[in-house]
Image 1: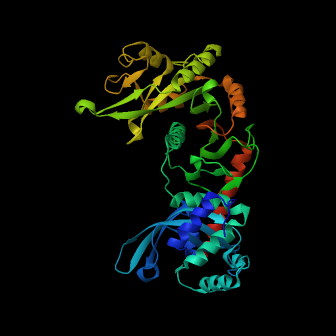
Image 2: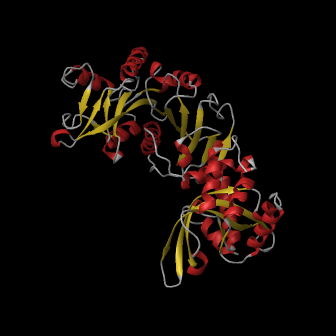
Image 3: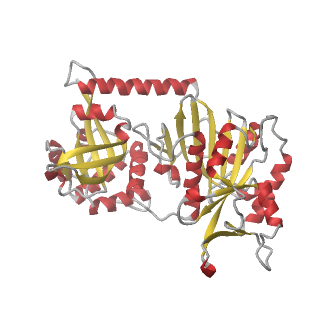
Length: 459
């Protein structure tokens, strides 16, 4: 049963599994070892399974994945039961006898499947689940009622909340408002500047309980995700009620930390949606996102921006802060202007977006770009005639350190973050830095553990 205190993702999962019940997916020891050793590991994989076992499974659906992590090569009986949740995203007939399923968003939950039986409060439900687990079939579909009971049983452990919340995001496709869409685009841009694709896996993901963050859609390199009530993010002076998520990405010896947070009167401080700090080149860039609306008047096919009610305050905030900053000491900077406005089409391909430096935008605002008989700024994509910066060029210049302010403003940025409170639009902070020795050691230990598990799985 659920009540008013039940998290939204849990309520959604209960409703979902009553329509599309949970499927138990059993991995043989050799399959588990091979998947661990694959390029994407457990987080995403495909399997070919005989048709008959999948006839009643409707994709997408929630699945429980069972496997055994062998502890030693010689003793095959001495193993640790592993339990994962994931999403069977699709199934497709690939041969006369087999159907291929694609499994995504897997994350480990506890305890093991056999121990989970003892946590089910309803005796008949526990007996039915135990019977289903004993079925040797590679896939077993559960009943709707048992599926809902299992969701609540797994959710009774706080340690499973992050994994279940991430899985629910893979099944739920709520309509995105402008704030959520732009936060997702800002995260994607930060990853691209870092040299990673938008679906690059995170080595660590923290989600704050009760807070919405587009990071919930991030893929994981590890098999766990954390949801917490922390009043601050570890190693960051960040008020807990402000932070909504934190993810860490690796590229060689570099680390990108992406923090999402709610903002309070952000226009009065910086007036931006994305703050990117690159400690390798000591440059900092702040970006304000604006939406382009389609303009089909008079048979035209154009995209325009007309000044919104926030622009004046945002520009004033940028201007006040810009005057206080000393130009970067890095002589190779092509420009030390670190405020940019990014214009994104409300509908359609985000790759068609473009950026304008603050000074260029102000020059356009003083010119004929104003709407007729109006004091508002009006920008036409066609009228700009290519006088803008494409995001690929922006990524390259930012990544190489040719644009942006010196990172001496980091202290001011931390002051901003500490002052954020919930209830406003979304902010993304992306910090690129050198990977610490402790993080490097942890990565190495994880790789060695995966290697040991894989070697054991093959024997």
